[in-house]
Image 1 (cartoon, helix red, strand yellow):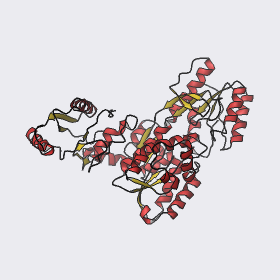
Image 2: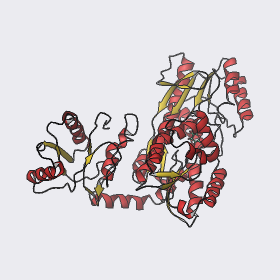
Image 3: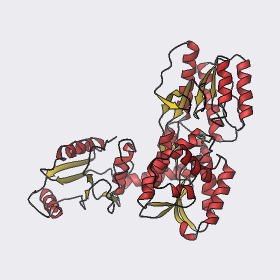
Image 4: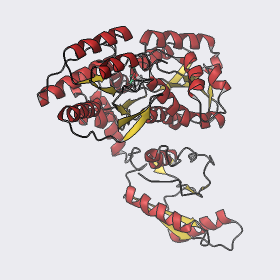
Length: 477
Ligand code: BGC
């Protein structure tokens, strides 16, 4: 039972379910609830009457769906909550989902990576408050954006509640609810567009220019992008999304939407079907975690997500077989741009450069972190085989450490590729350098090296390799 036919996301799930079920030879019926909890309940009841053993339910309204889940449980039917968690009831047996907090984090990280300097206008938008996922997405986004609001990289334009709470790193559900009530799109394209237009009308010209927009999903991103694109005071905007809907992938190719988060529905469908089959066959269901639905901990299986923008759309969407190239126009031009970049020897996505580069790093010979530095460098060298980083001991007797670094570099090689040397403490933000604070154990490890190198690459040349003083929190992908 899926929430609505009015969003391409759920049509996608329907098609991918049908394909997989046909392949496996199962009989199944897919019903839509058209954003109406009472229709959802009648759908569930109709299936119970037919004698089904398992219902896979993606609720329109997480709490209202408790009644449907309870009706199923009373009839002895196993309930699998699909993508969105059914809350406020014990009657949920399993939850198959994407890592929704990671979706919000990926969206926010994209905005952070694209922002330069300080005091960038940030517009926040969220999903429907009736959808538990809207909170998870917002929580993830806040994890990454809040420190960048506090440090002055961004300021929030369109939510007084968010401004009031901007010093608070971890929001309660009620606090998130207060913010979401001001910035909700209700997952509705028209609502999203009108809210964006209202925000732009209320904003001053100073709050426009080059702006950053957290849009919760692809449908709302396109609507919001259209509104921002039509405002002549907006010079440029970076806007997020999720779902890799065909229309948004086209927007990305055309440069009208900046990114999407690919949640590979094929994986979710596979997980849901394999849980259902295990239940029917009486086998033990393998789960990998659990989610609190307010009443009980629901055993869950969680899938990972991937950030997609123009730089990897061909690989992530076309070459992965997610959508067929024939769905899109303009892929040829995109390939040409990529080829030109490759010919220029720049592959910023991987290691900042695909040229052979040697970087010599000079450290303090008595520095207690020397061993950790060496370990970091060793793993870096494995990760980027075209870049070799050496660490050598500097002269500890000098009082001018930086001057001594240069002396050692010059003695080391007459053919240097390193143009500058930066001594970095986590959190220090020098020109070209990346704020290392966001790269905590749980956040964005995988983007650390690429982001670091992109930030330190000028005209395709890696100009500095900052090695932070504290290493324990760095894990290379
Ligand atoms: C889903 C998103 C979808 C949104 C609107 C969320 O619960 O996880 O993929 O875009 O609902 O339907």
